[in-house]
Image (cartoon, rainbow, N blue to C red; front, side):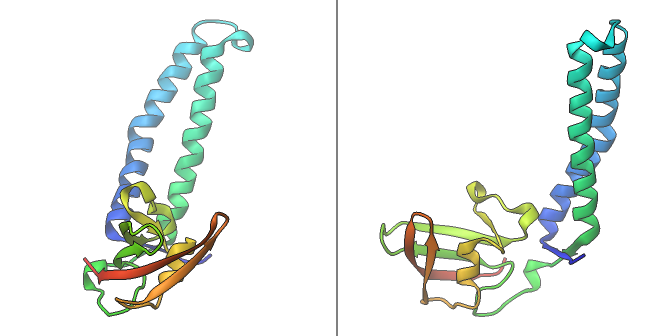
Length: 157
C-alpha cells in the first residue's frame, strides 16, 4: 500500500484517538455489554444490542486508525520551504468572485477538516493550487460552477 502523507500534529491526534479508543473506550464498552447481559434475555435486550453495535463501530475505527498510523509518512512541515504550493503549505487565497479571503493548510486526507482550515492534498482546490506561487490565479471546477482564486500568501509553518 502507498504511504499516507501526514503532519506531526495530525499523527499525534490520530495516535491519541487510538490510545483513547483502546485504553478507555474498549473497557467502557465491555462493561456496558456485561451489565446488559446481566439483565437477562439477550434477544429482546436493546441495551445489549446497542452496546454490541457501539463495540463494532469502535473496533472498526481502531482498525482504520491502525492502518492509517502504520502507513503514515510523517512530513515535518517546519522543515519545508519554497515559493510554490505543495503538501504542508499554508495558503491565503482570495475568491475573485466574492472578494472573500480564506486561509488553508494543505494536509493529508486523514487529518483534513475544512471547518478548521485544513484541506486534503487530494481535494480539488488543493490540487488546483499545487505548483502555483504567490500572485498566481487558479480555477477550480465544481458542481456549483467554476470559481477563480488568487494566492495572496504562501508560507510553511
